[in-house]
Length: 281
Picture 1: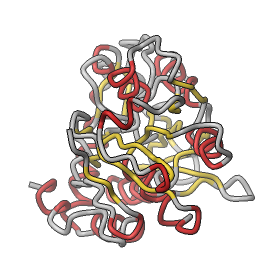
Picture 2: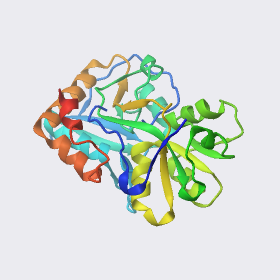
Picture 3: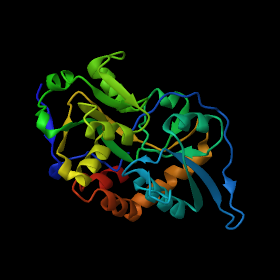
């Protein structure tokens, strides 16, 4: 089966302002707590956990300040919705337990909405759309699914939807899959030659290729990989926070601010021009 190879200059990441980075399963709590109030402003404050190792959605600078698409979008939503947000960086595998235990109010970490996750948590309306893709050195001339399956060592982040995609290609227990705790470590191993390829979210891989054009990597789309929607996660049954988020997201879309934020991070054409308009309907 032929695959479409996306080069750095011409990447076409699907980013409907609908809304994966996927993650492991975790038992959520049905309990719902009201957002805390900020003593200084009187506004509700939501503590937001994210794994800030997933640029351009969330990452840290040299001073450990968290920034990215999700951060800017949530700040805009908080302003529009009359609440405040506080961001907390955590390891990926700690996010879902933190939400279920009530340690944080919500998760915003490029999380793919899946039926499995919806069993233990609730999701906002989708806010971004991606697919899983394969990052490979251009020199390998990977042109088909069969070519990918012949690669001896392919990386994925444990519990993310890239991991599930790798299992779909190679099998759940395949020795061809090498797993990592975050995407940065995985890509570094591809750079070092320790991996033949890596599977992750299209927007993340496109961002990496764009900012490392001299390293000779390309992105390959696998037709069998389904489109995924990102959503903000809250505890199961927490309708108050869910309504806050959905109402604020709608306002940001309708005001045009969503499109401005999207353009800031995906101005290279990776986001279709009609995405924000179609998602706001």
